[in-house]
Amino acid sequence: MADPKAPPLTSSYCLAIAGVSFYVDIPADLPISDPPFYFPFIDRDTRVDPSSCDYRVRVRYECGEGLAESGVRVFDARPCWEMFEIQGGGRRIIRRPDSGQKGLAPLWVADVSANGADVDVWVTEDVDPMRYPLDQILVVQHLAARGGVLLHAACVVHDGLATVMPGVSGAGKSTICRSLVGDSAMTVMSDDRVVLRVEGDRVMAYGTPWPGEGGFATVGGVPVDQILFLEQADSLGVVPLQGVDMLARLAPVASIPWYDRERMSDCLATCADVLERVPAGLLNFPRADDLGDLFRERVLRSAAQRPC
Image (cartoon, rainbow, N blue to C red; front, side, top):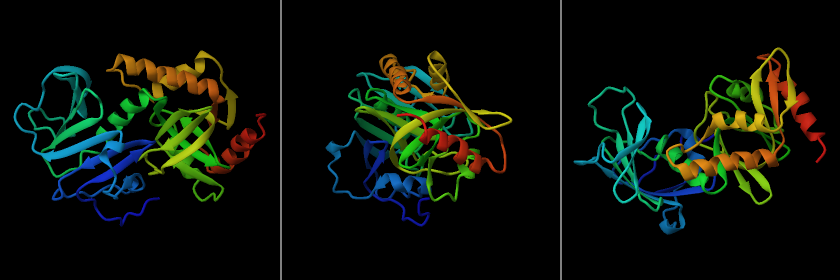
């Protein structure tokens, strides 16, 4: 777990998630108190060349006139956020207050340039906008064109290999991860959001700063050994999956940029590519007190004995 006593950030910093890098230029007088799970993903070395990062983000106070709803709405995730296509080919992302009450000023407005690398953000309150959902939106967009996909999934590492367990909310991701705490031979990378990237002849798993109920968030960067879709049952066991059934299960738990037709196609192609490279199965599991022991004995051991 990250150190909850790490000092707040001031001025510029770098954020890196699953190999996607951000140089964030933020007012020095903007008070920031970061959730502990972001600490491992942040670099306070301001000597980093901004041009070497995938995104260059400039944060400024006040939204200003005319920065609210403009352009053509291309995605609506209200009350959380919405996206517009604006003049020049860029995108505008607006973050609304969580209350969903109409007429309230946005918490922030972010303009993403047509080249996809420069982001200007105007804030109305003392918040760092480079947290969920903006960082996640930008990571998903960047990965889609580069053989990567963000999944609703838990991930545990054993013997240097990752077992990725996709599942919707309530599927049991955090339950399984909590049951494995205390095992020195195993590391929980994440209990809710995991990035998979096709790199050469391997699929790599990366952690994110967006944990689930268990609060697990580590950086990662581990080869994927198997993908196990979660399904609650009376007893623990793994049923191999093949063909279209695998993609039908993976697509609903993938964060796909539906607002961008080209990137949407790229993301779906990455999902199919991942499933061609990595064995997949259905993990039936009970909500048992000894789930951790069962998982180690029946799931990880069977994976280690699987022919290469």
